[in-house]
Image (cartoon, rainbow, N blue to C red; front, side, top):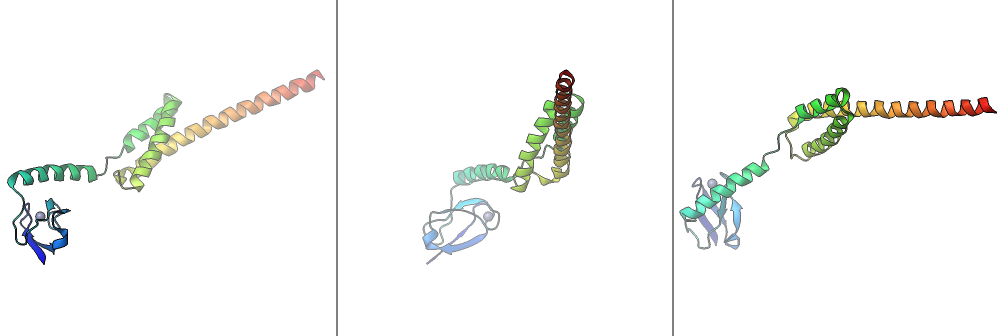
Length: 153
Ligand SMILES: [Zn+2]
């Protein structure tokens, strides 16, 4: 026998199988949380239940909303890596990687993807140049060392 009842939030007429009795579901009309009543045609939920339901509903809505992106911050960090301290470039790179992953999985606002990628690339180029500089320095050291040995012998 089907259970027929009304949503306590939006009063939408709802109907479901009686094996769903007592289950916690979201209203298909307003997506508010509701408990399917036991008896057919029972009108659900006392006022206290509606209040609690509304509170949990708003918490759930906040949790679903994606986090705001940090694109501007990452871009600033990338630039600070060039002009202030290379640590900022490392931070920009790591944070940008995390944020891009969060955007891919829908946990972060993807509208900042361009800024986030720009911050990451600025940080990466800086670190790449530092790595290049270190390699050139080491090559010079080796070259000078070899030249010195050659001069001695
Ligand atoms: Zn509803």
